[in-house]
Length: 175
Image: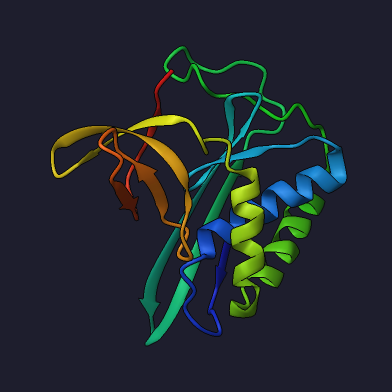
């Protein structure tokens, strides 16, 4: 599903709000508890079941946001090239699910909900305390995830005990 809207104000927590909305709706309606892998993936039992992509752009002088949410609902098999992909195993009315997620998401897009979004996002973030790998400026690092900051940037601790804040990029969990 893709949501296209003109925000009242720009909010850095659009992607986290979408992740919280997806998790909340799935929990409330299906009794399963998905988790979040920073910054835009939803996991269930260690496998990716949903991806979220947010983009900001200008159209006819208006700043718009597009949020794409792709949820694997019932797919039974995935290509070998996607060993960490799975589905929720939910057979449901897709239109109704999209409507519920849209409503939950748009309700969170108010800047006054920032604290709530951050709290709910961090609560579902399954990588806290885990060691992750990432590349920054061509240098590979491994670090322990401490949490997130007020912008939903990932805060990690390097082996020398210094902290680093990641605002974008891909992380991999190191087993």
